[in-house]
Length: 95
Image (cartoon, rainbow, N blue to C red; front, top):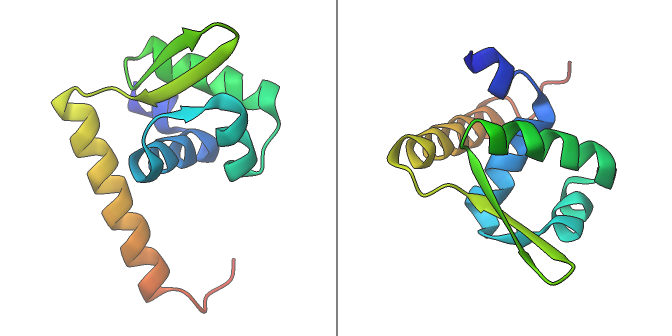
């Protein structure tokens, strides 16, 4: 099940961005991640379906944020720590 939710680099980046910036307008999130809006919304749908993110609308504005459930917060913290470690340790390494 976890590979469904985290099996996409974009989904991991969404979680990390929402952890770092908090609630964001979906267009702003797509811009920050450098991705296509429609692709982002497909991945937001998966994360929402599994309770990782929450969406709300204000008129035509669509906002998304991490769920405040403990396991989601712990997941985001762990991903952020791992990202920080990898960037510091392997910053000069290319794939």
